[in-house]
Every structure is written in C-alpha cells, then in structure tokens.
Length: 357
Image (cartoon, rainbow, N blue to C red; front, side):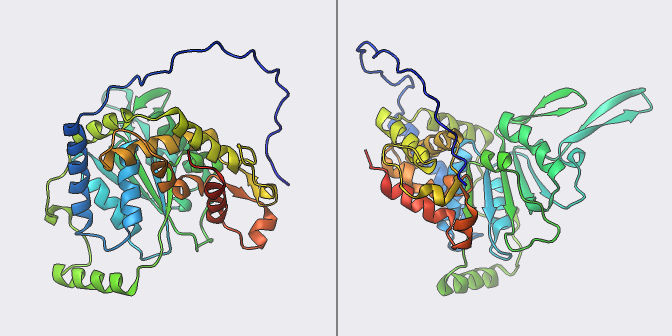
C-alpha cells in the first residue's frame, strides 16, 4: 500500500502581481576563483590516484559531498576499499580526523562524549568524544545499535552535540563518512529512515574490472605494503581554509529558477506527483524522497558545477548524482522487492520521465 500523503484541498490564492525578474543575490565567481577551485580538487584527485584504482564515481562523490557540506554513506561488499577511500579524503585535508569502528556494544557516550566527575575539583568535567573532529569515519555503521545511531542525528543535522545539558558545537568544517556491509545480517541494525535521509549521498561500490584489479596489484607491489600511510603520499594537503573557500564558493554558484524547478520536479515525481507523474509508481514505491532530497540536488549541483569550472548550474549537474542522492530515500513496496525491482531502477524511470529544461 502506498504511503503518499494525501493532498489537502487548499483554496487557490489570487494571482500575484507582475514583478521584475529576481537577480541572483550571490556575488559571482571570478575566473581566478574557478581556477583555484579546480586546482584544489585536482590536488585531492592526485592523492586518490596513489591509493585507489578505478572507482572514479566514488572519488567524485566523496569530493563533491565534502564541497557541498554534506555527509556520505558508502556501501559495498567487503574488500572493495570503502575505508581506504574515506581515509584518503580525510587525510587530504589538514583538519582533525577520527575513525570509529562501530560494534553492537558501542554506546552514545563512546561517540559523543560524557561527563566525568573530577575528585580534585569536586566538579563534573566534559570529555568530548571522537565525533568532535573535522572528518569522522564511522566504519560498519550498521553494526552500531539503534541508541547510538540516534545519537548521531543531532550532529549530522545541526553540527552540534549535547552532553550533560551543555550544547557543544562541532568543529567546522564537519564532514562525516560512513561505511556499511550489505550482505551481513547477524549483529547488524538497519539504519533508521530519519538518519538515512540525513546522508546527502549513498554511494554503492561495485567490483573492479580485471584491468583495474591488475593495476591495483601493480600499485601494491611497487609500494611494498598493503596498507596506506598518509605521510608517504605525494602532494600537499588542503588546509581547512581551502575547504571553507570551496564551500563558500559553491554556495555562490548561480542556480536559475528553471534548474530549481527541475530538481523539485524530480523529487516530486518520486512521490507520485510532479508535472509528469508515472502511472504505476504507487505499485513500486511505498514512500518517495523528502524535500531534503531537493536541497541535496541543488547543493550537490552547485558543487559539481564549481568543480567543472562553471559559476552556474546546468541540468547535467543535477542528473550526475541523482542516483546517489535518491536511492536511499526511496522505499519500495513489498511487491516491488519480491519482483526484484531496485531503487536505482525507479530513479532511472524518474529521471527519464522528467523533461530537461
């Protein structure tokens, strides 16, 4: 049964008075700003080339998510370098980095922090947890229990935590990457939909080709070690100021009304609405994407345009990461799951249906 919310009967408002076209409120980006942004992105890609073979889509998704100020969830079977990819991104920046290996007995205080009584001062002191870092990697996040997963919501949504009634802001920039293994069920806990919706992207990794796997072996043989030491990587790391520049520049990329309408139409179509609704979508989709997906499409589109050297968003920027943004926000019906339908197939039909402006 579909869970599309009913549309209330709202009286139609009076037509608005004609107005002058709105001009962009953000200052435009200079050619020097665009060139500098591309140079910074190329420095990150150069470090990825020393640790990862292939997986270009994952690399770009990680970089774009960081520039857009979001969070990313990486899913794949074991052994495809999920953790290595996330660590490479984190160590490409000079900010603080923490890795948390999630287990069923991981408690919220182990992640967020707690208050400890100091006998010398006879007062409680706040001990912050590993989530208070610029870059946080939550490895095998689906192994943590529901209580710990809920403790992450405030940090992801508001960039702050609450310890003993005291609200503590997280260091900026704050970027969170999480990995999960889809094939294991014992000792795992499904992520709640509220938390899944707060991940800007969900990247799904596939097996490398035979050529890529051979190149990987050649790289490991030349390096002489199966592990990556960030100190041995060539190329300068980015400063926190560089990341702040990229994020501020991305927010200044112009988004036209047509592009905004295009993003909204894609998300609305996933909910059974939109300008070109799909007839049998309710038999496949139990719940469509939320308005947070529209925000993600625009923010990711701005970041993608910036890294492509443009100060304006085009439809290809919106379509480029549509699957990563929508696949974890679309809930399928039991009938669709029984028929082997995937959320990526639904996204394919949605993107193909919505006309490009």
